[in-house]
Image 1 (cartoon, rainbow, N blue to C red):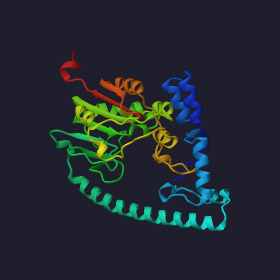
Image 2: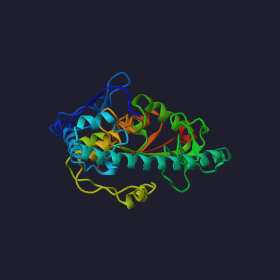
Image 3: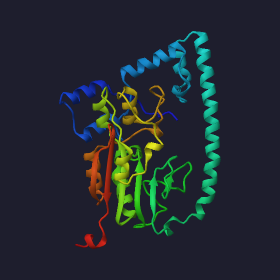
Image 4: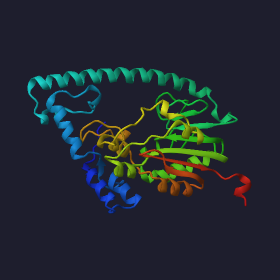
Length: 320
């Protein structure tokens, strides 16, 4: 669904150049620049180069099916001023993509219905060792209970409040590219609740995109984390489920990590899937410490990633 609020564009190339020349800003200030706030205009992620690419795709009639935003509206087609043949080609592709996506959504809803029917019979709070994958989406990792608001989940719950999980019942929390979708004003509340459900000695592992690194890395070489590093830190091997990144960090890739997935034009942004808070190693460390956890690891993890690992103090230590 399109977001009703007005949008402003951030010139990411100019912002990147400012940072490289030493004219950057603090993490919290950058968060406001990129994502706005509850009381300010929301920002969308486009560069002049990306907009030009869209115009060329529309004008040529060669827009690939995967690149067509399902939120593309009639007004965009009219504004593009295509000739009748190119417009027919584009409309045919749009119709094909929309029908295919509708079938996918229908199949997913049927599978989700089956998961919801089974949910009442799954007593996760009785598990001797309870590991949660929060905001799991389609990710499946052995031994982890999946929790999200929709999809193929074990539990359907609001991950900000975790109403179905008892305090001090969880041994490990893993969250992969989820917290950036939580509005900045709810981040502290979310982490505090996650810390609350952890057992004393429990571990929290967070992987999030680093938007500051994304701004700085436009035009630079991408560096991926290898599987050995994942095993060393006892992380699920998400590389099996994600396409490996190679080559140069393009505008498209940087915008994905800063603002989230969206191939639609300005004004038709998929707000539900957009990033709403900034994460860097420094911000992650400060936020986890504020939630009462001890941070054991907070670093850039690959070119555009932040990884943070924190533990909850044991009762004997907490009583000291």
